[in-house]
Length: 536
Image 1: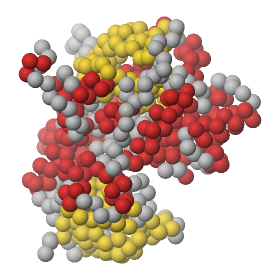
Image 2: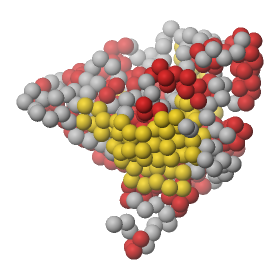
Image 3: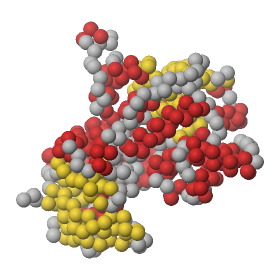
Image 4: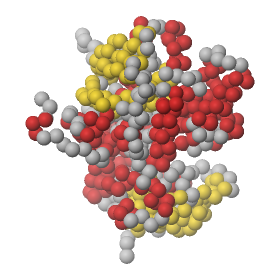
């Protein structure tokens, strides 16, 4: 008989009378990694949040029992829950920027956890904080102690969240999409870290994820959820080898596939030469020279119209900064030629008319869409800003692009919170598309989406590219998505390009050790070169 750490029986969760989890039974065994998988809206996160009663009590009705060490957490008092949260049961959330306090430094936020539960302060707390930051792969952790969340990359913020969760060596760690914002090499390191901690501490791990490659590498047991119910549960390898439920098979087969569509154009739309973005560090009292963070350090590239250039690298490598610099959203040095215009010499006033041709789709569709504006207002805002068309013509344009991205035009009077993650990203694409741009910067546009939705969005981007001759700068840490969409590829490390060329060549025969490391961490197959082909 298995020794269960958590026993969930007949769990029902309803929001405003609408039931979203239906009589769920689930055991989390001591020392095991249990994965909950399924698409957005399947009830994974609601189930996990119910364990620690993190759902808003005034809006949620919970029935059933969740037992931990003889205590029913559904009936537990607030005082009992406070002793458990962050101590015996800890949680890593999906979006670290909304979970970390923007007004507190890294040291203060981790130190608060150590103070509340361990009574550690001063030097002892700082030593433990440095140990935790090093454990989760933060480079030069002593330099990050006084950093605020906005000064860290997305991956670094997630690692700080993991450090906070691990601070008290919990019995159960709930990881809600813990690697969504991380590049593949850091994903692998975090997975190895979680496995090592689980084995060393005998810790149980509840992993919530839509990334089945990640689940297969770490989980011992998998539960597949759909519409608030568990449709299948099995040992991990048995599930992947022979899934019984049709929905389980659908998830396993949902990897983005195919190849980029050949371009019909032959001229360059974008040329970048020796682009630099250096951020000055605070100058010391007795220092004569100022140090810089070289986020982008002498990058050159060219991009044909109608093609996609994939930009890959670790968090903090300079990918997003490069994209923002090309669009003149951050200050930079070097040449940026777009069509027949040199952007680097234009001020913001002269850049404004060109913004219509240079659009962006961001990583987080919910954060980039105003919750106070309807879909109609969000998509039409750019048209209004640039003085394009009458009110009737703008509405007709909104209807047209909604149809193009596969959304019902009748939904244009609804608000972002009424849509799923994949639908919100389609709205963000429509907002960029309505201005008929030549170049779209896609900054991690699929990383927060389920695999099934990723596949749909990749196909949509391909179709739009062919139909409109669009050119994409595609920033991503997901090499499977890059492989399916990008014609050319540049690999960035520490602000410098270490390898570039046609994506099919790089994916089949990577030359730089760092590129090989990325491909190995992603699980994509490639043939290692012979010893004589090793780069100098």
